[in-house]
Image 1 (cartoon, each protein chain N blue to C red):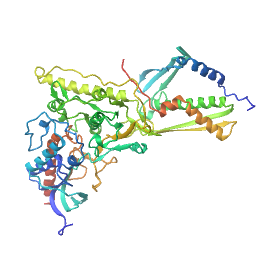
Image 2: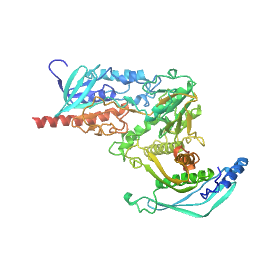
Image 3: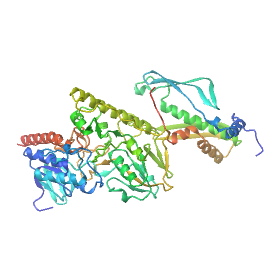
Image 4: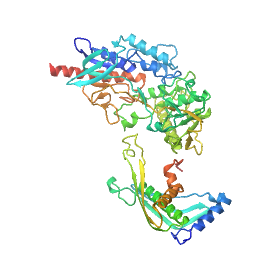
Length: 421
Length: 184
């Protein structure tokens, strides 16, 4: 630790991704003295933990943050990973965020009404702290992975870059959310036959009635739905990411598209026993549920379009073919006969709070919070799924959340100042 | 094996004959079992079992069998019958036990008494939607047999093992099954 003890500051923001930077902008706007600590470089996860072909699920025009809107010439396109890295770095420059890069937080603990933040480059003392360290730090792998035969190679999306990393031969992709369907598509196209294990999922067309599905959800207010307006926020926060891909062709990548190129669908992975993977018989129901929910969303969109006199300006409402499921999908798969060489665990992600020594984690290891106001005075959370709004996990969702939470943070600081005189 | 007096009330000769016949005419082995369920009120429903298909034709039980299913008062229900998950235990217990009797008969082992106790553990945080990581169904089922038979402990254990190997309900519970639910 440098001599002179911890540095004192009003607010420490942990993480210089789009969430931490949006918060930095809002804090700066409100005159709150702060520092943004970043373990590596700005947009580090984008630099080191994403596969090569990935593009954002949201169109470029939607890449807006407080103090910055998209200025490029392709508003309907989708940013590649290098584009996102440039975009976030550009944002950091534009807002002149007070970032200290190359600084890993090793511990955050609470001492009275102050937080002590220890890093590998000195310590800070602050009244308020914003956790914006990301929601996808660690790949979630089900415990049954341990039962897979040792001959099977396993990889998570955080380590996956492209199909050439994988052995020749069949691949079992477990999980059919945005990540799973995208990897299933490109791995199958590389000549490695893919079997895709499908549980509950969210089906969405890329384009509906001539407009991007994100445009409709944005315009119709679906993305602005607040965390305190939904029936069951825990369920809403656990809804899998939609089956979407951002591509120059604006193509829809749903299960029908995958079976169309020869990907085999199979139920939710239930267990691995004696070298045999077992799959739930619920595939048909999971697909029927996803079709029903998609149609409910399209109904909402159609109603909104009519109410807003858009019916003359866009193509007529229509519905998509229901998901095709074979009559009796296989329920077992031999993992020892060489047909499957690799398992890709596209089974979600979770945050890393190993550095957090404040008792705010619930029994599932998640931070207890009310719309980002953490259950420890002066602590705030950003960038989590449905933190305050349905759009919270998207880049454009950070703005409204950062505005709300920086207001709360500032009033907390003011009240604390009033009490202590 | 000289003593052939074992009588467990299972017509093994018939079963062996049926096996022979259906080996020759496997289309007759295609069975469809049916149940008809009517909601009564609340969580109470009544399921009746009467007809089924097998041996190439529609068949009927001797009489209609009816099963009430409900939930206990603990769940603010009226407890008109066993819970559906308990009925699953009924199915497993009776299937394994019928198997024990049949296999014993085939092996010329006289059974004096057979009883089984079953326990299915369940974390109801799953069905209540409290924790999506918890499954809805049993987290495990434990079956304990207490068998008095004119046979060694080893032979009795072999009976129980063989009855699992040939049990339909054991297979239904331990292996996945495609389920299609439609609304007509």
